[in-house]
Image (cartoon, rainbow, N blue to C red; front, side):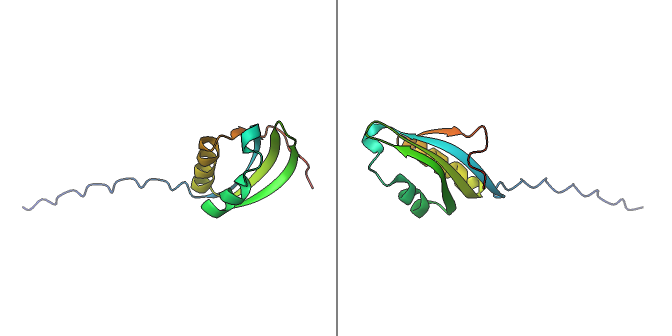
Amino acid sequence: MATKAKKKPAPAKKKVTNAQEKKRLWLMYPPQKITRPILWELGKKFDIITNIRQASVNDEIGIVCLELDGKSSEIASAITWLTKSGINVEPVEINVIES
């Protein structure tokens, strides 16, 4: 009598973290970074949509509320790049200028 070999279950597939999402962030520029076109560079380097929700810039500091729209992995990479570029990045805790 022949016995059938049991099939091994297929390994679980890893979840892809490339779902679309929107994230709002506060960006704080130090004085030496204010004149650098950081947001332009961000849009060129990453496949994301940027939307400035609020901004205040003077000679001493730049503060921008920025909305990023795109794949989760692209947004995470963009945030890492901003931080490495010397920009302080913090999540927005409340809605800013809903319209």
